[in-house]
Length: 458
Ligand SMILES: Cc1cc2nc3c(=O)[nH]c(=O)nc-3n(C[C@H](O)[C@H](O)[C@H](O)COP(=O)(O)OP(=O)(O)OC[C@H]3O[C@@H](n4cnc5c(N)ncnc54)[C@H](O)[C@@H]3O)c2cc1C
Image (cartoon, rainbow, N blue to C red; front, side, top):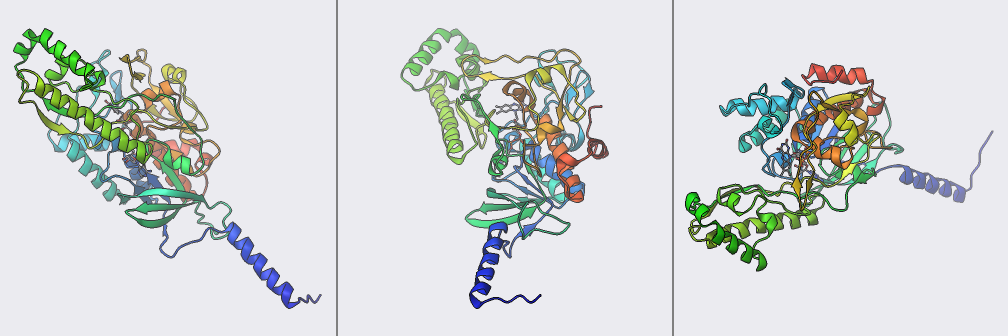
């Protein structure tokens, strides 16, 4: 059959073709970088996720908005990761433990004795690591594993390539990320992404649902002020000091949350404080949070210097950022509840342990940790690391799918690391097989995790 076309029909068909192509294609730029796995956020979860992914043979890029790795553990000054042990045995190991152990050993520091029960003093099993050394070793661990680190960068747009005509063949890439780095726009195409931002920012860009409370837990600004006061003398003058303290509060020179454990504690060197509403999930909120944290420190320093005998009070050290406890959580294919957490439930897809008391900080009343019953260790099901309705995307760390109470325990660093390791393994395995993480066989993920020294619930 002979097909004839007028010149007009010919142009119409070309234009229609071009229109369809532009509708179903995502422009691919000459400088686009291709990889298997992109991890966004280089905190406890992101470091471990990226290293695990690279060690599984996946080409991995780690994007971090800040200037160093560690997130809240370093930039936020919480350099005491925990808890890796429960009831006299280790429950979290793998890559996170490797990093912590190396930092302790290289600096000739000591690990706590994990076989001495802590009772309700769970913090005794946290591990104090030298902060700058931890930063450098985390970076070295990533580089040695083949992770490409990109500091000062952030994704601004995430495009699904599922139905894109510029993406075909067997090595299918599922995502295009447009990132920004100091005014420079960059493009990355990858098969799997892992959200380790602590806030679920990457998931939100990809269209996933997030959850949060109207009033979030307070943050804390880690700093150290030495009062240089004669403590014994101050104790004899406590009535006068209290009077001065109350007057300063009335005059709005200090706030009760600047002195979480009271005035005498601060004089003795306990600088515990709360920064109410601390939120780092947007640039504007993060700016405001940090300004408020730093103002709080200044108030305390000036107040101490106004006390008789406190003239020589001085600032010794200060974290780069305010530590944030709670913002957004990603809604996953399963939401871990406080009841699940407390019961130590083991699901068929449980891939990591988690151990810490439920630790919700409430503005006015402070925190009353609810400890797990003797012998109970919580677990994390894989579905809580998979955002609902979105494939080729995983989430690890503070913002995993959980209710508020469960999250107040799941957010600690050892658990962030264990969820990071699970997502790193799953992202790499699924990238190498060109399938979605949800299609992976749980036994295969478990076997990979064990190969990399993780402890997996059975
Ligand atoms: C005061 C306080 C005390 C705590 N006490 C303990 C304790 O005793 N023991 C313990 O183990 N845990 C403790 N925690 C909890 C713990 O420190 C954090 O929950 C944990 O470190 C979170 O790790 P993460 O990897 O999920 O996120 P983060 O450490 O917050 O890391 C997220 C990283 O992602 C980066 N990022 C964010 N958004 C983007 C973006 N859009 N693009 C690129 N990068 C991005 C950030 O810069 C950051 O580096 C405490 C927390 C606080 C605030």
